[in-house]
Figure 1 (cartoon, rainbow, N blue to C red):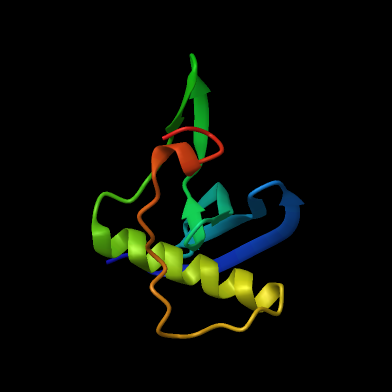
Figure 2: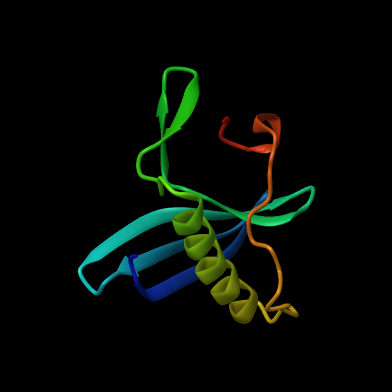
Length: 106
């Protein structure tokens, strides 16, 4: 399994997007452009994406549920610490979200 060795969060307010983030994996690989989005069931992390025609497509993403949960938990923990939100360590970071909830498509 990968190790996230650094998480940087850049809070802001762009509609439902509440922050941008980057992660460093194993001290050798950086992924930028992650978005922390406030959905109907709480915050979730959207992977970096690019517009292709009329839709947005993720340009990098975890391929296992465990990796997605690990990334989302690390990013949401740092986000909640950075904006001084109460954080429950048992919070389930993975939220099923309908495509129409995403500000950039599904």
